[in-house]
Image (cartoon, rainbow, N blue to C red; front, side):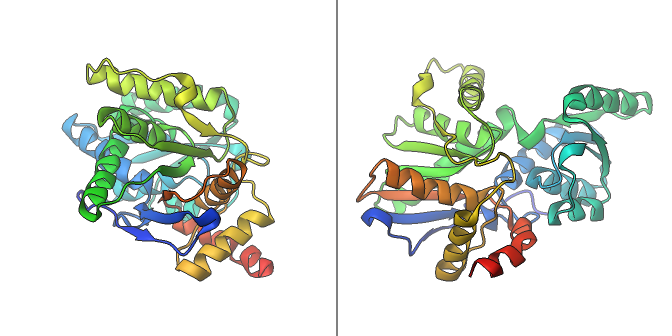
Length: 315
């Protein structure tokens, strides 16, 4: 399995809401386990794992987790035992959970309130067995995950320089926070002027915004950079989370259908489809017009197929 990949492509879209010009950065096409932001991060985590001579992995995520799918896939390819701690309250079967099973990862279910202690027990258990386990926070949280999207930001700058354009807004799904933190750090380190808007798929403010701010400060501190950002500068939008993680409505389904039919690009109800719908609502609410807008497709292609019947019924 490759550890290196070209910059993910950026395509112009047919969407023209409020006379804006829309583009999409196809991180879903990163050639690792169906791609996505978690693939971009996973490559760096495994580089760190190998450098540190770790020999097993423990991580956390729901049955819908793109992160868990990709970590499980790369671990299987490298022959590294992979243990996934998953909340028992969200253990419905999904394409991602089936892939995790196919890759041979060991899944331990527990109440969400016991995730922390269950992770500790698993790490202790592996150490007793003679392993040197590597722990990855849920969603690939931490400075390594942030750095992956500083890299992505540089890819965006490269595209702008090549084609002589500037994106006024960058939208994306914002979950555990390091995708947005990396983009914000990229903006700060390059002294750019643009809005980076994360559409939350589950978390609410002030917690969601604070997690991103903490991630930004942690990354910059490790670089010994004295740059700072005010809390209100973190655009973490929680107006479109609906009933929380994994929930969606008919408008989300309609949005997914429109993008699939008009652009041939699959989105999903948990992450990208929900965020694309939220982006459009945010644009309408804030009367954003005549701008160049980039949406980052952060992956989740297997999840698209979980909702085919709902999508057909929405036609």
